[in-house]
Length: 355
Image 1 (cartoon, rainbow, N blue to C red):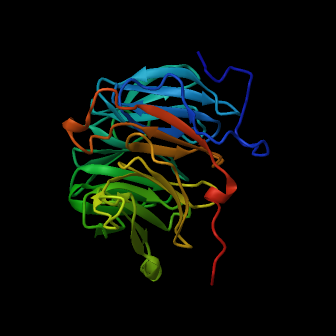
Image 2: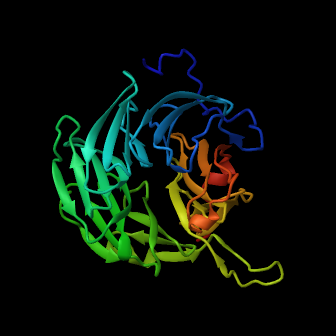
Image 3: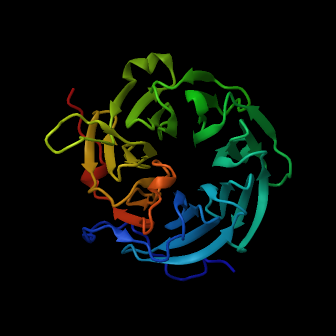
């Protein structure tokens, strides 16, 4: 049954009513760590992937109230979720080596992709030539799938296991183990346009493409983010900065406690971006003014993943154990929460240029 059949079409676009200051906790969250969140590009529906093997879909109302609408399963932990362009399908990849598709109009789930190892990332590509699903795996390949065909359209060999991938047509960026980064121009999707070693010295955790598709951000396990432009002519704008660090004690300013940057997301309207980390903090940044716009109060656990909705008025984030401290960090009663933040303009709008 379609879950779009409800007559209420509440959208959190009208910002005139002052939202409650506190972030809203989503009811009935997943039962294990949350790995991935993604909003529909056409409505305020949120897809959530979890280590409990399930993908859940929530409807987000005008005041942040949520309602579970649907759920489907993988045969192992879900590692990544995304939507197609018209919001009619959810795509997901998991530790069962499978890519799956959920049709929101029929409520049916089916397998649409297969790898030899877990699928770490799924991304939808909308191009003039048609639409394909890109899947990045620990089997050291990216595969492109036409959902009408059982076999991949093509397979790209990566230098190492895929850890992260993002698409902003015609740009696709893949980050792998051993700090390799491959940049693709999707007009030629089977050959990298550029291969580089990450500008950061430690393992790559996340890459995220600029909405302008002329560059990307890289986050590492060592509390650092790099802003990287694709073309050499823009290289003077490349820079990196420290974030998600804490002082050892209130009296010392040593920033010696260093945490992973778990996710980076760009605002769909203003091009500013969010970072969230294992330290339980979230920041909003303006890369052009090189300034921080907002710092959230520290959450009671690592912030594992995040997403803006299509209008940039809602910011969803998961407070979940991210295994950054290994097995010993998985303490009983560790928070596992899905939160919604109503974005205010001054948090996400660019600062005027000082030049």
